[in-house]
Image 1 (cartoon, rainbow, N blue to C red):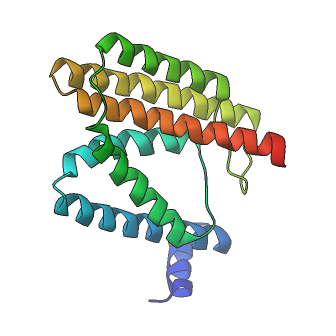
Image 2 (cartoon, one colour; image 1 turned 90 degrees about the vertical axis):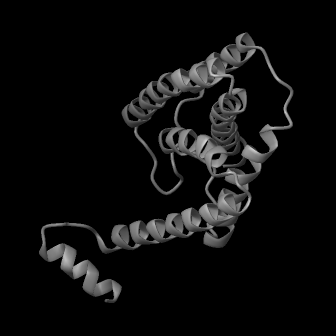
Image 3 (tube, one colour; image 1 turned 120 degrees about the vertical axis):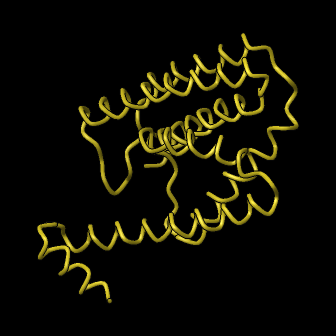
Length: 187
């Protein structure tokens, strides 16, 4: 089935989409499908499935609300995402063990940074101030949700997974900070 037939099939069954939106959504779906397939194979090969999941789930959850850096090249996008999602969980094991107080403090600082920085909108789809407020509020709610897991992992003597949650938040914050700085000074 070619794309036009799929588009017409959806249109006939009550899904009213612009053709551009349909093509963009399908391209994103294909990109994520390739990404998940590659990261699954790599994480199985290196026996890091749970490590990768403990980083990937909060990272994409935060990033879906906060926004972040976008690259135009699909192959580069997939490669950078796989690299980020695999290298960070592997590198966490080299971090020195931190006291719970410091993890908790850095996580709360991340929540404060989310509240101050706000959501970064996509260059192709600017958000209204109300939408930015909505997504920032949702990001803060997700951060509270994952704070529970950070505490749980630490209490279960699994601090590496707590680090992964903390690092996933801070990577998203560095991304939106970079996006805000880029817009302020380069655009």
